[in-house]
Image 1 (cartoon, rainbow, N blue to C red):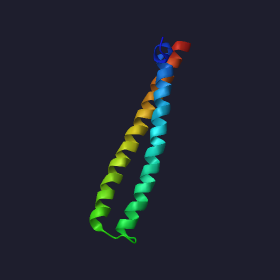
Image 2: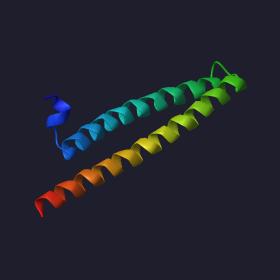
Image 3: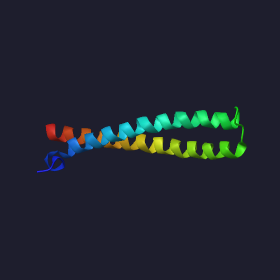
Image 4: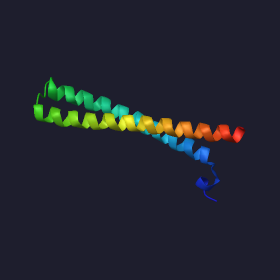
Length: 89
């Protein structure tokens, strides 16, 4: 029997939530790196409006990803808690 088959739905939801939280952590780190690069192209030593705009677009997309990850994490946690509460009732 594989590991996935022996897990409950709640366990699986918790595992996915944990993975999403890890993805969120790396996405936040990437956002910080992009922000530093944007500053260098927008106002700093590598001033180039074209590159600054490209990085700004990436920052916008990365921000959207962070928002979607946060929503998914909350949804998975709510569902896992609901299942656990129903099982205890």
